[in-house]
Length: 192
Image (cartoon, rainbow, N blue to C red):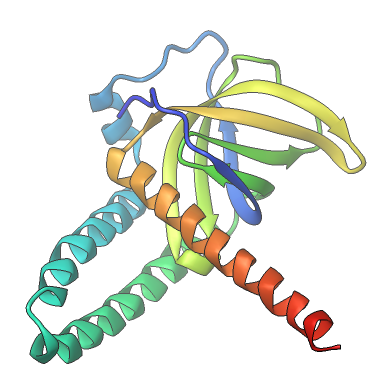
């Protein structure tokens, strides 16, 4: 659950809830991290993990299993949408920050004020396009002034391995969408 690897980040808007841990608080142990994880986030992580391990083997069974695999993927999408809705309700009354970039090892978000370097933060990330909700503990690396507040860069210090993999997959998925949009935007220029 400790994050030692560095992953690329993509620029993409998302929402998150941020809560500073007590000054001087140590990084939680793996057991403390799991115990403090909200049940709805734990459930979302488990569902995502089950989806990956259930549907992937079906795809290798051949054409007959393709329709079944597609059906199960659709059912999985429905469950993801419901979980996303439930998580939104759980966190709906709490203030949200706007994230500007994310990857498997860090995020950047906008805050009204600077946050001191090395401050530990409880993070709840909501990446709507991927129906993902991720719980992590991060450490502030730096804060830079921008027009509408401060851009805060945070490195994950505690994140579930499956959730980290989910963030990497989400970043690749969104990057693919962004590249396709750029390609489509250039096509009319080529027709002239």
